[in-house]
Length: 121
Image (cartoon, rainbow, N blue to C red; front, top):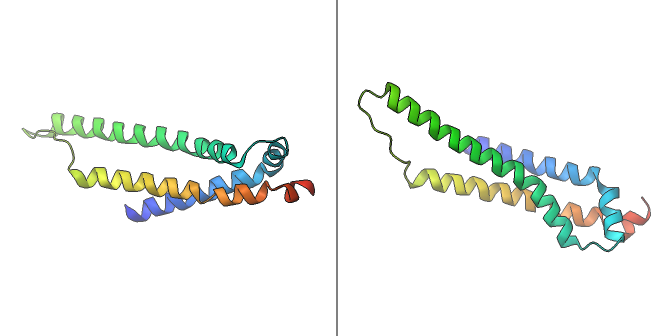
């Protein structure tokens, strides 16, 4: 699971950086119009966090639903209990790794939207 999480974090970082580079001209013009870099960072983070959060919640919820159905229907007297702390720690570590991957793209947003680089665009 750690390998899959690392690969997905790397993929998220690459996708975020490529999206920022693709919209370099738009971001640069927004910066020239006076938009602060912090606002651009928040916009990029939101664009990455909304699909990530919805996917994480949907996959965790559907996983619990399928597990509950399987244990209830095929369990032969087994009972469904909540996962132990390792599950929650792994989930939080995965979310922190995804946040670090998005935060790693902020340097590209800042460098690609500087006034000097936008002026020659």
